[in-house]
Image (cartoon, rainbow, N blue to C red):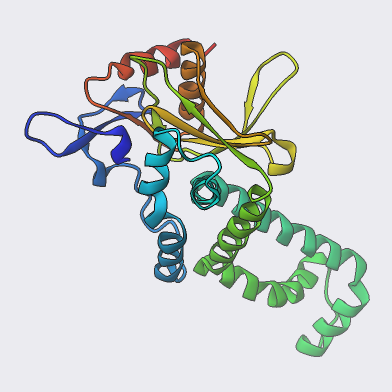
Length: 284
């Protein structure tokens, strides 16, 4: 976030949050008050955060500087840092947790329906063994299934399943990205990127040139996120270092608005608040 902020007068580095739900610009604040999602990992969070810190975050300043100075392509260690950074932010996201939790809940529903349908005789015997009477209908059989599903509900409620899913998915995406290249996109003069509180996204362009966001890795053309107000990192098939056209800066900034959990951030006095407000009124 420091790469998007600036000092105003005697104040420390600051960012301006724009609340996407309330559609208004907020007062500038220090970077420590931006982009935080409290208690994102609920189970054994300290060890996971330390792992992310040592494998990715501690190396980001060097990698971002190399990207901005056009000396990162060909440096396997630093390109890996930025690709890992994008992978990390794809899973360190409320959107990812929402998808994960919905999948787990649907899996429980599907398992319950399958077990009750295919194993009625076994469930009837278990119910009679436990209660001494014949089960009267599907609701009674559900009680038997509940005993076996209950531990998984406990794992979900504790955050253990979330923790495992985030960690495993991060490693799986890292593996996929290791076979791809890195692209660095720079802004032209007098233009800047915004950054969302959930800034990484997968993407693909349709045959009509429309930008689609947040599909599965295998269905995408790559993944991207801004790493500084003048620099975007993209995981794609071929390496590239390029200054983009102003319209593409607007497109990427609008992408950040679309994927934001609650806020997008930009440098004080950048004028980007007008762009964000205007894009909200005319999203086309």
